[in-house]
Image (cartoon, rainbow, N blue to C red; front, top):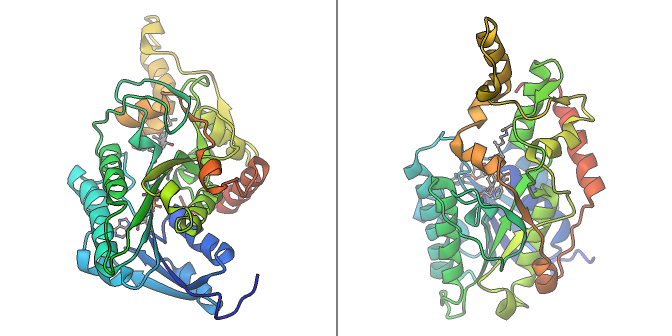
Amino acid sequence: MADSAETRKLVYLVTGGCGFLGEHVVRMLLQREPRLYELRVFDLHLGPWLEELKTGPVQVTAIQGDVTQAHEVAAAVAGAHVVIHTAGLVDVFGRASPETIYEVNVQGTKNVIEACVQTGTRFLVYTSSMEVVGPNIKGHPFYRGNEDTPYEAIHRHPYPCSKAQAERLVLEANGRKVHGGLALVTCALRPTGIYGEGHQIMRDFYHQGLRLGGRLFRAIPASVEHSRVYVGNVAWMHVLVAQELEQRAALMGGQVYFCYDESPFKSYEDFNMEFLGPCGLRLGGTRPPGAHRLGRGPALNALLEWLLRPLLLYAPLLNPYTLAVANTTFTVSTDKAQRHFGYKPLFSWEDSRTRTIRWVQAVEGSAP
Ligand SMILES: NC(=O)c1ccc[n+]([C@@H]2O[C@H](COP(=O)([O-])OP(=O)(O)OC[C@H]3O[C@@H](n4cnc5c(N)ncnc54)[C@H](O)[C@@H]3O)[C@@H](O)[C@H]2O)c1
Ligand SMILES: CC(C)CCC[C@@H](C)[C@H]1CC[C@H]2[C@@H]3[C@H](O)C=C4C[C@@H](O)CC[C@]4(C)[C@H]3CC[C@]12C
């Protein structure tokens, strides 16, 4: 591909560009968007790795900013052709208050939309989530579903509620007139559980297993299936959407797409073992029996403690919400992204697995 000043004309902004997904989107844009002239990376916390990107042909501009501050967002958006809005507060563990989650995920997204409208930016790609659909509070399975599969999307937890509200705002903004009179074109991508290099929960499970002498304990039934998607493919889908939105505005504007690839459907724990297994961990036992199955006896307390140990070990990750999500089948099977904009996963399952294993091996010994 020619690399001349003439072909490099576009300014992209990635919000949340220093997060787990955001970093992969940033790196993917630099590799796969030959029209890129300037790449603005906007985040509350800037990563030191950005420095090494500043020596290439693309101008990489690091912007430390907060999506909840409308003026900061407007200043970052002004003059950008495309905004990829990945910034979000991903909290299903009760660390942040519901108000903060709404402020970042909903108000932050409103600020991004209004900034596009005010400054004349026409293309907005939003990172939504499968959680906008489910699993719902009734624990209904979603089995090999697609974007049109009927499902009762009812939530109470602030994270999925905020993502659903933000997604609706983005889709409703499609077609709004931006400064200069042209129409805003928006679309939303819904990743399932993302994995790959930089995945904090995978790192936590790995360190947990090391602390337990190389063992993890099964806490959810192996029969519950989850869709997972490799971070490189999620990033690739964002880049492709951003590239195709202008040409295919009528088809893609206002649409939602699940993010999918060839990763196998498995239980959350069995899937993690695809990477943690080759790094020396073992997953022990069948599902832990409930207390009701225990007989009475002098060793009851010790036995109970031993049986509940796996659950107590996972304590920071476990609450009624995460348990319900982990215990409910949610699998996606769709080709909408392929039909609408020619998406094919850039990384095969084998590549995704190998890359993730290499990354886990590299975190070995690093502080949790
Ligand atoms: N991780 C997953 O499995 C998953 C699945 C589906 C969707 N998503 C969505 O993908 C997006 C990225 O998630 P992630 O897993 O990379 O999370 P992450 O926490 O690693 O990244 C989010 C980034 O947003 C930044 N951010 C948070 N609040 C901000 C604010 N007020 N202003 C500016 N930046 C702010 C953070 O600093 C961080 O760098 C989120 O919108 C999330 O909802 C994630
Ligand atoms: C019982 C323990 C052994 C396992 C607990 C795992 C639990 C923390 C995991 C299971 C499913 C995970 C969620 C799922 O992959 C999808 C998403 C969507 C995304 O938008 C944000 C992250 C989230 C909610 C994952 C969080 C961690 C969960 C609940």
